[in-house]
Length: 156
Image (cartoon, rainbow, N blue to C red; front, side, top):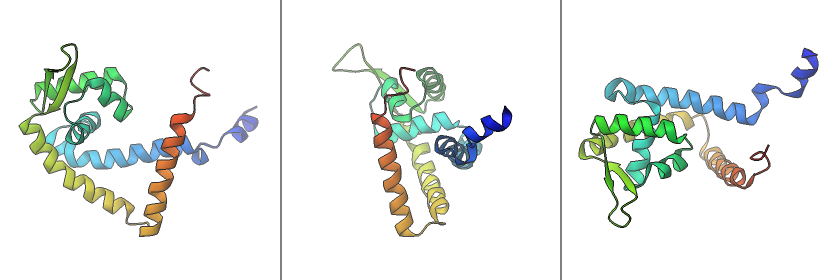
């Protein structure tokens, strides 16, 4: 039976598995740049990265942009609030809505991490030609857009 099961799926060739493993490897390597110096977890950095680009958004919006569970986002937001790296306030337009932004200190940390993150990305992509990098980026965008249209697994 085990031989038959092995022929059904080869993990090392299964795209979702490969993407997950690659994402974990890349995240772990980049995380060392900010974990040691700033004591940030991967989730905390992702929240700060989102807020660096999209200020004044809710925790739900952060969860949607990062595709990280709301409960995990909530714990990381609380940690960042305690460290005064982000600020949370009530929206002026909708008193039921809580919004989050980087604090001044948080922005300073963000501004220090971004160059290191971009340098790591450049180093990672160095094994690809400029044309391959463009194709890779295009393929990732296409896969992302297509994945958003796939609903067949949601109900099973």
